[in-house]
Every structure is written in structure tokens, then in C-alpha cells.
Image (tube, rainbow, N blue to C red; front, side, top):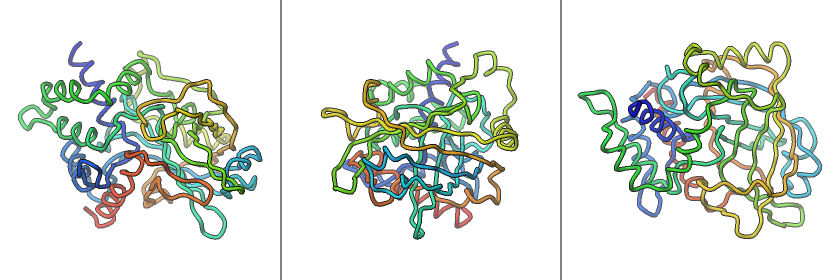
Length: 333
């Protein structure tokens, strides 16, 4: 029983990134260090992503709301249909990871705005992240590297990591208490980080967002986690979109003084004012090989005028590691 709990904890933490991280941080953690550490845990599948390797492509559109336009001047909220390329995925670098794994799922979106502008949004199906600083994630990867003799991480190294990295514990607790969603279309996805909306009057508002499924949220039962086949999420989404579209409402929480702007391990209170910023419609889905999403680098710092980043070290850290991973896979490595 202890081994099972340890494995679940490891999955909840090791696989919880929305993508590889990386930018030289205060403690001199580099993009290459982090990507190399991820490769040390999962190995390398040439030409593929280092994290969130198992995924499904999808196409659709987004229509923003007039209420959101009061807070942000981004053309994302023009009210006109915006074409979207999406990728739904499982965390980690194992292309054969079972869909029943108690690990995060991701939703990455590329919005094709007018005049060849882009907006990227990358999210997880959990509301908080497992690291406040890049060093925490790097240390977890180092601790999680499999022992050649056993093929598994050294339990003592994992124990030592947990004892010295308190910023990883809240996410692990959430994952332990919440089974993954039953399907992509019945899952919420959170932006994790704090962002800035800037309106036409240059007024800045701190925000966080969540994409809420119109299907309602449904999680797998403990029995389903044991009995379902290893691959069901992709085909379920493909079959669903052949019948009718899947939709999510973009709900934006408005920050208040004192809300954290740079710590993704802390969730904002549920009492924050929320607005419906628009609706995402996914009308078709397909295997990722050769599809439009496969070659996209969903860099979360690709933003349109009217939306900006904060100084969250994890958010800022991600962009260069995306680039490192992207260059490796484009080069066939």
C-alpha cells in the first residue's frame, strides 16, 4: 500500500508540468538543465516532446464576450469567431503512459488572431502548480531519476525531496484527493498563473482563468481507474466531436489586493468576482501525428496586445525550456 501511495505521489508531482520549464533563474537553473533532467526520468523519444508527449490534436473556435472587452483590449475578446488549434495531452515523457494514470492532463491553445497575430494559452486540469521556483522542479527531476538497478526512483531521495520542498506539497495533496477527469470534454482546465489584462484606457487588472466544460465535470471512479483500458481519451474525444462539439466557458477571476501574483502553488479564493470571457468550441479531433498541433510550440509567453505576463518565476521560466525542447525535437533528437 505504501508503494502504491508513493507511486501516485510521484506521478502527481513528476508529471505535473504543463510543459518543460526553463529560463536562467535566480538560482541559475537553466533550460538545458531542466530538459536534460526530464530526459533522465523518462528517456528520449526522438522527434517528440520531452513532456506531455502523449497528446491529441483538435480544431475549433473561440468567441469572446463584451464583458471581457471591458478588461482587455485584446482582439481575442472582439466577439468575432477566432480559429483555434488545440492539443489535449497527458503529462510526462512516456508515450505509452496509461490514460488512467493519476497525473495531470493539459490543454494547449493557439488562437489565430487578425493580422497574423497569435495568442497562446496552456493549462492543466489542476488549479495549482507543484513548484514556486524552477529549482524545485529541477530537484524533483533529479530525485526521480530511476535507479538503473530497479528501474524506479530511490524512495529515500523522494522522501528527502518532500521534506525539503514544501512548495510541492499542496499540489500533491490535491492530486491525491481528486481522481482525473473521465474525458477531456468533462474536465476543467486552469491557467495556473496570474496574468494582466490591459484595457483601452491602459488600466491593468490582475486575472486568473479557468476553462469550465459545458458538459459538466466528471471524474473517474476508483474502480474505473483500475478497469479502463490504457488508451481511451483520444478516441472518446474524436467520437464525441463527430456527434457534436465540445465546449468550455472561459471564466476569468478578477484579482483583489493581496492576491498572489507570482506564486502558482497558491490558489485564489473562490469568492473572487468572475466574468465569462468567452466560449471555446472544439468541433473536430484527430491523432496528433501529422496534424496541425504536432509542430506547434505552445509557448505560454506568446500573447496579444491587451494580455501580459506577471513576474511569476515559473511562468517566465517556461518559455526558454519550451524552446530547448522544441529545437531538439525539430532536429530529430
